[in-house]
Image (cartoon, rainbow, N blue to C red; front, side, top):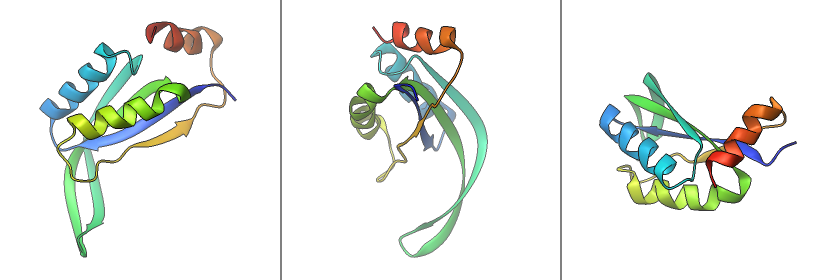
Length: 105
């Protein structure tokens, strides 16, 4: 187990994905944010099943930064209830995991 995590969120446009990704890296809340286009989401919202094309953001960060990452996503995001979930990184290359930590200092 490491102190590194991946955080996932989805947004409705390329511009919003770039805005949020850049802000998180600039604020040193994430070492890297991958922007994955054309994710098709099917979900229940206000009693209806909806479909939307979204962008998936995959953030590389630390467990200690998660609370601040969540707050920043809530601040910057256009959705009423934005996705913000963390996934533990159990293991990885020592050099890459070290880079994540160094990039956030």
